[in-house]
Length: 484
Ligand code: HEM
View (cartoon, rainbow, N blue to C red):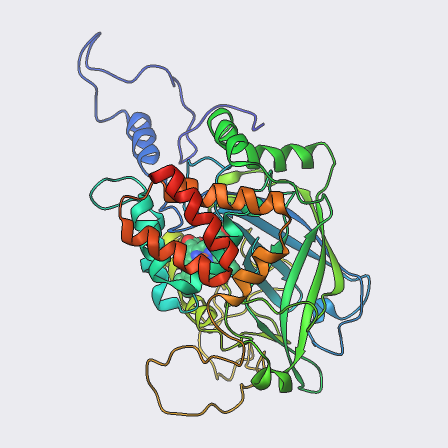
């Protein structure tokens, strides 16, 4: 706790923090009471815009340790030796709820991880699901509008959600996942994480591999039923945030076993699924998950606003040896996050302690802007120059993509031999045990019962029927029983 007399923002001692200054006893308040004005004005500006999605979250610092040699696949320095440790910061979140929303809801969970590497910060901004609802960034704002509040009612509307999903059959896989048991994790500690997109790794010889990241919880998967979640969300809206903080305070450090699926670049063109389609997984029979690391969270932030609310993660933050893939969703995200950070936190967001590199320093010629701290002193702010200072390396972080056919145009994501919108949703359904199928159908029919438009419900059921005939049949019967 800070000691000594209370002061104003400018450091002058404060005589009275209980009574504002008035003209006579019981008279009006004076403008000369600068402490009062400063307090009221600062208070009015306490909030910054919340994240447009994933507003509600919790974070912790920790350590990533390499447990297997991946140098044949990537030249990333932080992955260069078994046993090597890198500091990390991980922010978990829900997607749709606003800042004060309850944690125990059916929603994907964000899994945003910042590696403070010696070659700069590497951000892996993933979810607890291996796939997503859509495959093209151009649909993201529309999708999120249906998850957020309706412009007329001001509430979230099942009609909007199911109208969009039923008209976007590529969402069938992710929706099947979301309404299954894993749709409401018991806590952030009891769920897996995924990079979800396909990313590029490239090794010291310039060879390219496409990879997908997996973080398997060492705490075991634990979920809540819809009924349990309804009760918990009301009783303890902060359940996930509290669970994470208290576990770390108790010294029970949550950990994840980190793995990667690796596809040699030459496989991509002929693979049975488009490897850059975010609505699809790579079945493990095709590309097994290879373990290469351990992630542990072991330190709570000291100040939630400074370190969690102002933390920024960008899928465009790569380091040498790691890069993007041509996944159209990922390509859109490469723009969206930096733009959001500049709006939400400001142009110098990267300079904040939680966001700046910890194992190296940022050396740019960018300067000034709101809240610039003058860190560059009198150094030259341009390059090339004749005064020394930072210079370009000539070596890109990632390798070029293969040549692509065709002209410019609004091209749909190319389909590979086994690609359609339903096959993997059906495979997921068929993998479930009987009791899991029953809960899935109950959760879906319960949600569809709240939809007013018959055409949306029919289209939705048809999408699940196309995934699996039994799935569709059961769902139709359950929906009919509830809607009449
Ligand atoms: C084109 C599709 C997408 C767009 C345009 C988009 C955009 C955004 C934006 C603007 C934010 C707020 C960033 C901020 O204010 O700091 C955000 C947060 C987030 N997004 Fe996305 N997103 C997309 C898809 C995805 C996908 C597919 C995933 C996971 C695989 C994902 C995971 C996250 C996470 C985890 C956060 C929270 C990051 C944090 O904790 O600060 N997003 N997204």
